[in-house]
Image 1 (cartoon, rainbow, N blue to C red):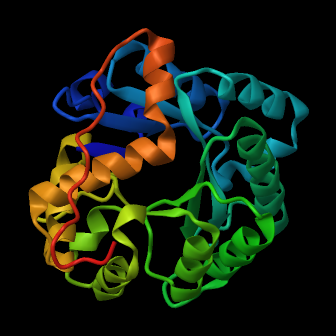
Image 2: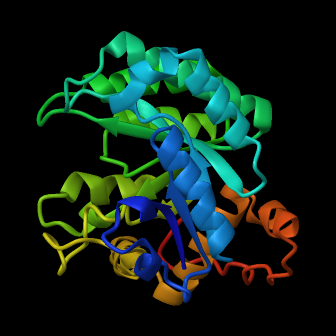
Length: 276
């Protein structure tokens, strides 16, 4: 299994959070220092890879040339497999929409220059959709076909924009919550070759662990719930999800740079009850 999005540096015990039984974990930086920690974790563990960027709730930092230069330098590390997380957050009022759009555009340009996927964070207040609509417009106007809708919330216009652009859609532990019927309905509409799963550790623990600190190992619970949603064979879906993550993040190049010879994930079998 692959955890396509976690924050090892925010876990109570980052070393203990690393699950050697997972094929891969992508630990995501949210500012310069946490991006450095993500790379350090990737260097320390053979199945950990890094994403670097500036989170939308720190978006004004991207206006600083030194911050942009530091992230750009870090992004060139071969163990960095994605840029972000960037995006649009209207749940918190820490940053202006203008600052978030500037940070998004800059990180989109960086991802494009490096040929790495862009990890997109989108969060709205309950019953609102300003962030989702801003993200959908940004994807449609960005002309970049390599990205991940992280911790997807189910918004139909955002899903349509992401799929039209060729992006991947990643589902987290909230897929398992009783109130998340819209997220499960969205998952059923995603082509199986565009699906990813994540933990967003230490947040969003899946059922029956909701309310407890999350860890990458729990990605298996989300994958099992996704198999139920799709009516798919769980083992076949796990193989498909690993193949999707391999394709999205280009782990093979990072493995080669690390000087390792890990076997490629097994070829995916089309899960039953899903559309390829």
